[in-house]
Image 1 (cartoon, rainbow, N blue to C red):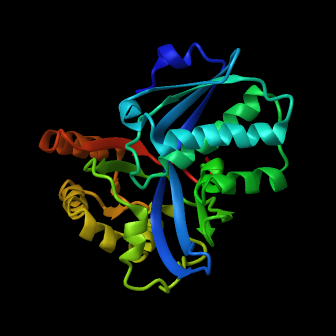
Image 2: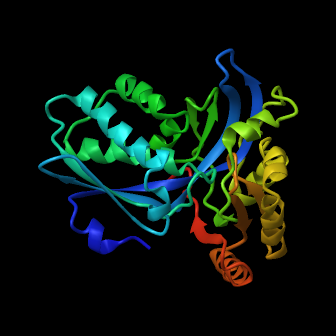
Length: 298
C-alpha cells in the first residue's frame, strides 16, 4: 500500500505502473548488440510511487517493501539520471528537489520497475518545475535512460517495435484481472538473451479488429514470450510459478519481460483475489500481487 504519510508531505506524486509484456517476440539483433523486439505491452494499477518536493538541495530517499533491497542499486541511480538529464534540458527553471521513491515492486523482475520509476521522474519533475518539453526533445531523452522508458512514459496499452522506441497505441485492449507472481529470484537479462537458440523469430502478428476479452485472450495465447524458455533454464521456479497460477484458475499464464515475474489472467477480480490468497498461503516467501491492468481507452 502507498505510504500516505510520506507522499502527503510532498507537493507532487506520480505512479510508476508495473509494465506487463503480454507478448514478446525477439525478431533480430542490430550490429550494436541491441535485440529487435515486437511487444504487446500493458500496464497495471499497481507499482512504485514517486514523490517530489522543492528543497534547499537535491535529496533522495527510499521506503516500501523493496526499498532496502534497492539501496545502492542501479534502479535508484536511474531515477537520479532522469532528474539530471531533464534538468540539463530544462535549464534554470530546474530548482533543487527532494525525490522520494516508495519501492513496491521487486527488483530486476521483468515488469519495468526501474524504467517506470525513471519515466515517473520525468513526468513528476515536469509538473513540479512547471515546464514541458516537445516530443522531439523528450523522446530521445527517455530513450537515453533505457529502451523501456519511452513505453513507461506512455503507461498505456501499446505495441512496441525496434528496441522498444517505435510505439503505437492499442486503444481496443481491454482491462484484465491479473495476479503478478515472482519467486524473488533475480534473472540476468544478458544471460537470458545469450541463451536464446535463435534471434530471428517470427514477428508478432495480431489480427486487425480484435474486440473484447475473449478475442484478445485468444490472440495473446497464440503469441509468445521468446525469453521464457531460457529464463526457465536459469530459474526453474519460473516454470513452477506459472503452473501454480494455472492450477489456481488462470485463463493464461506467462512470464513478463526477461523474468522472473509471471502473470496470470483471471476471469474476474474476485477469482484473482482468491487465487492470490491461496498462492500466498502456499508460498508466503514469494511475491503475489492482485492487480487490474489499464484498458486502451484508459
